[in-house]
Image (cartoon, rainbow, N blue to C red; front, side, top):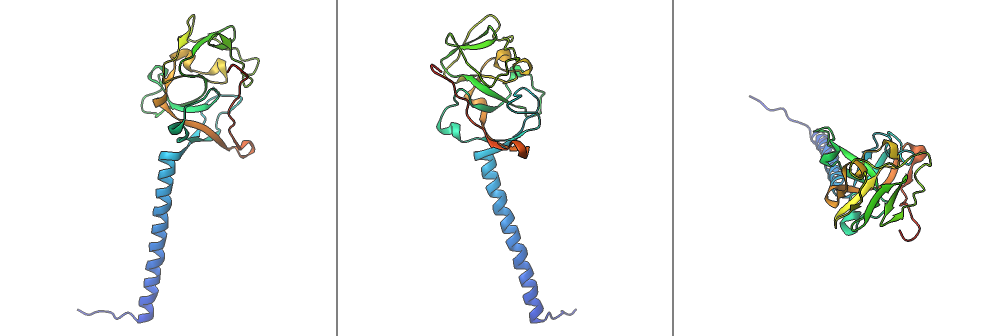
Length: 204
């Protein structure tokens, strides 16, 4: 049995290589830790799948969802929110299905869908983001009835009313189902922008 003697300059060389790879590993660990904190607590990327929010958002758009704002405040009318699909929406099991819709009714309000519009507390909601050719019909949940929202319930609807499965069909969602607010579209690059909150005239 014998040992190979490594010259001192070679020992320093391997030590430098080891330090270099150790720094890389430490950097990767730090970056992954920051990514996990951001992903789990602050923002989450989502891809729009379908045309229920067209023309506001198109199929294939990539958005960032703000997951922290609603820890300090409540969703407001006009917010575009991402939420876990309710059971009544019959999303395929195991798909981790999230929906993206616009908040049109907030807790305590009475919502009706009639005469090609959504009515809040008896007042017709003006919605400039709805193309005039898109007829707003009631769904199974709102056909012939008004809905009074509970203290943690929100009425949501897609901007592309004829092609949206939303609260008109399966009722309001609760605050616990909301993942966050869509706040930034980053793809396609040509439509990259901060997502603006829709505004309404009084009394809304």
